[in-house]
Length: 291
Image 1 (cartoon, rainbow, N blue to C red):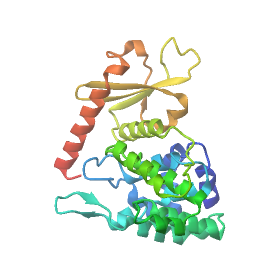
Image 2: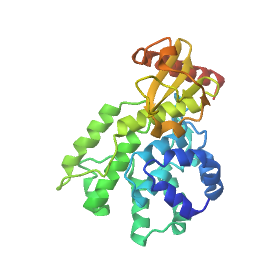
Image 3: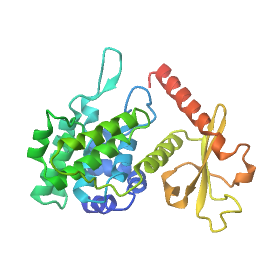
Image 4: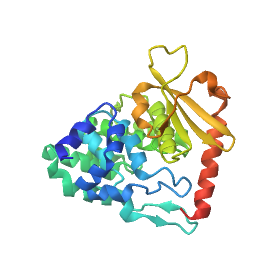
């Protein structure tokens, strides 16, 4: 893979599936990525790594090269800053600065103007800094109105890029912070981020449970054109199933079976509790193993 190829991938409508398939090539191009493959995002969900979170964020922002690069690099420094609190909670102090430093090493490899290089660095550095009445002047000094729109897009995608957390509270705080600026903030998001997040998180869980998940193109009589597929994952309480558009087929790197909806023992709407139960049990099991 070349840096030009990476740029082309980042400008796809949904870069995540290609980035996931070519992750080893990416690590050869930018070795620091190897450090976030398998690196847990927090202490409670070790199966969902920093790279999978990064893919959610990349897909969640507009196909704009500086914005997508900021999304790609925003957490790359976490491997070097991993630490634990007294309560053994995982956290990454100063990872934004380390991520910025790593991007600087490669910024000249991308087709960016000097202005755009600096913008990517600012987006990375400010993606977790709280916007408040006390800090708003700093943001006004550092960002133009258009660039603030990009920062808000990155911040929102970052919040929605985790499988757990108080999303409503964080998103509410982000929305309320817009009132501190003397002009309207218009985020440059073009996707239904909540839907994208849920599908990518399900894909991450399925891809990390090899042998316990499946996908199938044989769906039902109400899908004669093959526009949907079925994905399922085994849990201690049974199977969780979901019908998805074929555009998400490559997101799921699991065994392909030939199943139809009529063969399933439960209706699709009855299985969300099974997925939640399985995720909780998987988390507890990993914590006991010290994963």
